[in-house]
Structures are given as C-alpha cells and as structure tokens.
Amino acid sequence: DRCTEHLHVVLDALNDSHEEKHDPDMSAALRRVADSLMPALRHLGGEDPAQPAPDLVRNMNNSVEEAERNLEIFRSRTATEDLSLRGMLQLFSLHQALRLLAEDVLLSFERIRNPDFKGSAKRRRFGKRQG
Image 1 (cartoon, helix red, strand yellow):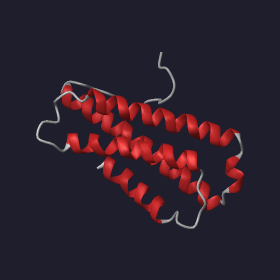
Image 2 (cartoon, rainbow, N blue to C red; image 1 turned 30 degrees about the horizontal axis):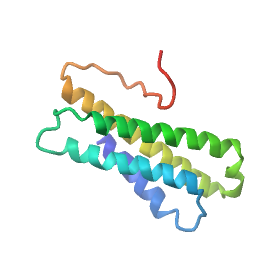
Image 3 (cartoon, one colour; image 1 turned 90 degrees about the vertical axis):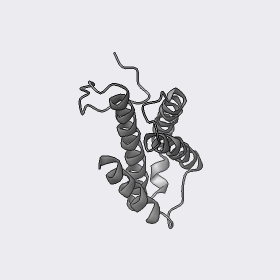
C-alpha cells in the first residue's frame, strides 16, 4: 500500500511538471532511481521474490545515493532560484517519493529474506554512513 502511495505521488509530480524547465543532472539522477526501481519491483512481484537480488539492491542503493548527492549540489549552487515554487515542490516531491519507494522496496526484500525481521519504520539514510 505504501509503495502504491509513493507511485501516486511520482505520477502526480510527473503529470504536473510539463511546464517547468528541468535541471539535466537532477533529471538524469531521478531517472536512474526510477530505472533501478523497475527491476526490483518486478523481482518482488515475480515467482520467487525470496531469491537473492544483490545487484538489484546495490543498483538501487547507488542510484538513490547519487540522487541525494546531486540534490545537495543542485541546492548548493542555488539552482532552485531558477524554479518557480511549483517547480521546486514538484522536484522535491518526486525526489522524496522515489526515495521512500526505494526504502520500502529494500524493507520488503529484507522481510522476504528474513520473515523474523522486526525492522522499524525508521528511515534509511542514503548517502550517509550509518553508525
């Protein structure tokens, strides 16, 4: 259900973004996140989702971390000043929805591999080392 909610936010942001100009680096980074999510979602819906999927997880982690870095660079060079408020909200909504979707997919992989997993709702920090 949560994945579906995230996908609705992605769809709404994409449907509403046709009038805004886009930063090519952020667009490419977000596309890579979406591209890494597609095979992971297909794997989860496949015949044997419990099969190990290390490449899928690694690719998803890498793409989300790259998007996080690009967002920081994007914000630090004040590129957001070129966007309308609506454009900024669309960009951040899209970024956050893809990030949350990736977190939920990773949590799903963990719960399928380890049914006794009692993971919390605490969000994973992409791009930052966890202690």
